[in-house]
Image (cartoon, rainbow, N blue to C red):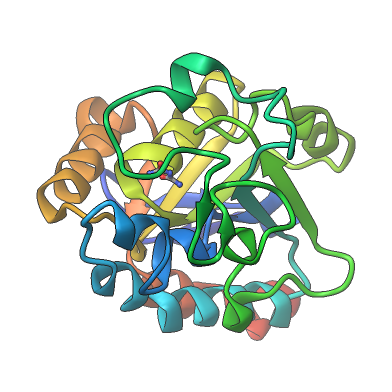
Length: 227
Ligand code: C5J
């Protein structure tokens, strides 16, 4: 059964039996004051502001018995999955693997690498560590989604123009229909978020669809799915 979700560039044909929510990189180091993002000089309050909306979106999926997948941008402690071209890029005060205020930067298991407590994965929900910006590179996620019959992905998380957009583009190329929840994603740079959204919906939805949480919530109610 398809539900018609008002969206740009046109209504998204949501099939709850084939859909999953993907929450990208809502980890402490990108979002909390004192973390990696903060240390790089970014205004993390922009990202902190979407946490209640992301929490509401996760709750909406859980209430409807729909799958929720979480990602973390994370590397192995020995950095064997971090190409030098990534680690050495730019001239930051701190690099991936260095000791930061919340442990080693972007290293799996470190305090800063944890998903925010408010958005913690529930038992049974998939939480994947991804060494790239995109969620399919070196994760095996495509095979897992195929096994579960998932063909539609609803996206939230940070940052819109980096890991969210990269993951959406990777998903689009693999044949998934992608819907971005615009008030459940954010960037350190408002103009980059706005541009990323326009790029996604341009040319008839060349990457996918975009809608606010309220539009999805209106149709994805318990009555709509189960009634
Ligand atoms: C970045 C991300 N911005 N999760 N990572 O480096 O978007």
